[in-house]
Image 1 (tube, helix red, strand yellow):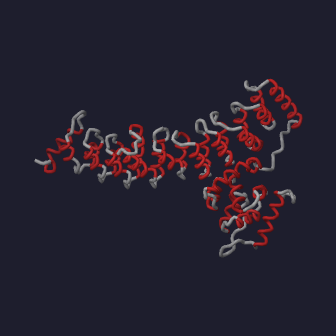
Image 2: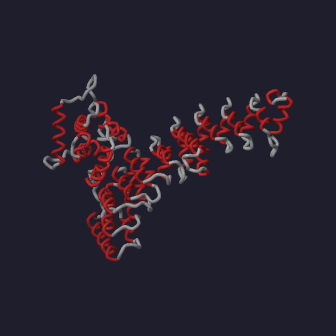
Image 3: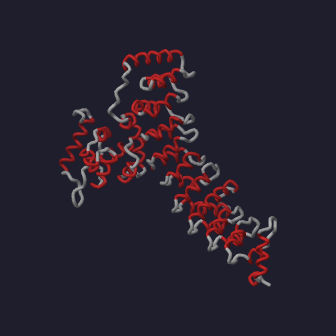
Amino acid sequence: MSPDAMTTPSKDRLVHMLGINGQRVTYEQARALLDHPDPGVRLTLAARDDLEPEILYFLARDPDTTVRRAIATNQATPVKASLVLASDADGDVRTDLADRVGRLVPGLSQDQQTKAWRSVHQVLSLLARDQLPRVRRALAEALKTLPDAPHDIVFALAMDAETAVASPVLEFSPVLTDEDLQAVIQASPMTAQIAAISRRINVGEEVSNAIVGTGNVKAITALLMNASAQIREETLDAIIDAAPRQSTWHEPLVHRPMLNARAALRIAEFVADSLLQTLASRTDIDAETMAALGKIVREKLRRDDGKGLSPEDREAILHPEVLKLAEKQTEALAQSGKLTPQYVLNASAEGVTPLIVSALARLADLPTGAVAEVIRTASAKGMLAVAWAADFSAEDAAQLQLKVARVTPDAVIKPRAGGGFDSTEAELEWQLEMFKDIAEGKASPIG
């Protein structure tokens, strides 16, 4: 009697066998249960790891989702079945598969000529491009610490627009190079992604420089808190230049390892008294610097007279030294063809940064200082003129006024009815010339 013609009592005996621990099921017996009307029977079959690959492959196309999920998590499932599951209509199936396939990578040779590796790579590629972020995230979590994960897959995940997908590999993956990380920083202005890079072990000097060049306050804070991050002296100087107006940087600066005397003395000028005491108690500071720190404390107390220092009127992100670093980043974007109005609009969702200021200046062919002055004064007319010069639409100009110049909603200059800038070219040109003169010191600052 063939398996297909097996009677119901015979099938019932096979079902009973499935529930007996250690009971082996032959190919013919398993094949006889593939079309069993009870999904629970097929699910029990799909969970076994002692079946022939052909049986598991067949179950990968089972109409019941729970059966296919069991196949997706089964360590014995063949790669051919995984290829089927990678295109499954159910997101849970693909998520389960991403987690399991990621665990398979360490056990495979990376020889691109082997069929097994090529097939697994094909599965990973499909999952890395999956439409559901949770599927891509499961894959990123599975691959994030593997030293032999395929570089192209990890890099694709690192460039993912979803923070939950990109962050795990950006923070942990040993596969990503410094060049990869700099490419991500150039392409993604999102805070969470850059902050994830800041938390990596042994961040290199060039990567640190690129992070600081974005002017992203949270990412720089994470970088300063990362004791293993390598920050060259001139990069740290740029951070210290802007630090008086960024209180979140004060404590990590005070605790930075291998802080030279000059940096310590500069930091002492603006940190709170409690942090100044912490700075002065460092064991790696020489006696001469300790004495100088004591003098700074005394002078600071005399100058403040207990009232505290007046806040600076410029935001740290508009500091000239920080903007210089951002200009290097902007140049790299321009050279790679990625510096576009759409890039700036995407970046503006994160708020104003030195990179946005520099990018707007480059697109509008204006001095960076002129754009910085527009933002410092929250000038609606000034930002409208910058957007016009940079070939943004009137609708985009309204968004830039809100998100970058921080103009209040009731003061935003909206597009004319039917579209277009609600200002003449002569008026816009006049605004640009005025802010250029202010930047060059030929006119008095506004406000």
